[in-house]
Picture (cartoon, rainbow over the protein chains, first blue to last red):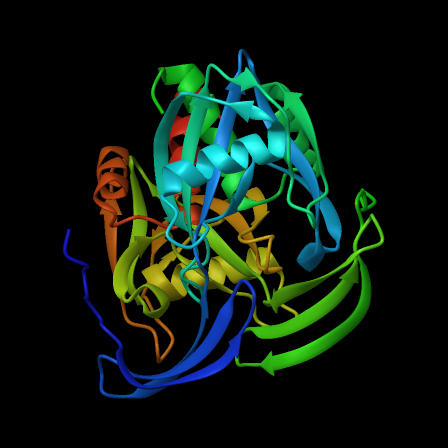
Length: 184
Length: 184
C-alpha cells in the first residue's frame, strides 16, 4: 500500500543529536499543513520482534529488569532485529535464546509501532505453537527468568502491574481472543 | 505494590544528553547482577493518555500525520499529560479536543509502558461511553480528521496498515473482547 500522506509535515531541516548503541535521536524542523512550522523530536530504532509462545494452555513469559522503569517486569520474549535480519528469523532466535524453546509452527500476528508520536520502533509479533524444548542462551548482558503461565495468571499479572507493557498486554488480549474465536 | 527489583541494574553514572520539548535522553552506566557493566540509553517522557470512545457500535478514531513514520495513521484519541494533570482529566480533555465528544461514563482499562527497553513512556487507557457531541479544538500544531468506524472496519484497517500502533491495536482487541465477554 502507498503510504498515506494526509496532513504531511515537510522536513525543513534535520539535526542529528545522538547516535547510540541502540537508538538515535534527531530533531526535525517541519512545515505544517497550514504553512506554520514546528519541531519534532524523533527516535530511530532498528525494530524488534516479539513472540507469543504457547505451550498447551500456558504462555511462556520472561521476567527481566527494565532500567527505564527501575523495576522488573514480566513480558513475552522479545528483542531487537540484528542488521539485515528477517523478522521471522529474529523471532525464532529470540524465542530460543530467551526461553530455550524452538518451534516450526510460527505465524505472524501483527506488526505495530510502539510510540508513533516520537519513535519509529516497530515490533513484529508472532505466535509460536508446538514448542520443542532446547537450551536458553541469553545475551551476556541479559538476565532473565522464564515462567509458563495460564491466561488467568496473565490477567492477574496485568491487574498486579507485573505485566505492564503494551506488547505483552496486547499479546494477552490476542491469546484470549484466540481461545474464544479460534483466530489470531 | 512494591516494585520488583529482581536482576536490578545499579546506576553507576548518568549523563543527560538531551532535554527537548517532549522527550529527554540520558545514558546510564549500570552494574549488572553478575558484577559486569553495561550502558543503557533511556528516553524520559511525561506520560500520556488514550481513549476508546464508543458511540453505539462504532469507535471514534483520528487520522493524523506521524512524522517519525513519514505517514498518516488512524489511531484512537490520545495525547501527553500536561504537568501535574490527572490522567482521567487528560483523557477527557484529549477526547474533547480531538473529537469534540464529551463523556461522563469513562472507565480505566489499563496502563502500559510502550517501550520498556528504552523509554519510560506510560499510556493510561480509558473507555468512554454515552458520548455527547460538542466541538473539537485541536492544538495549533495538530491536524487531524475524525471517523466513526465499526469493529469490522477497525480490523480491516489493521490488515491494511492504516491502524498500526500498539495502543490502537490493543484498543481494538479490548473492544472485541468487550463485545464478546461484556468485560473491559
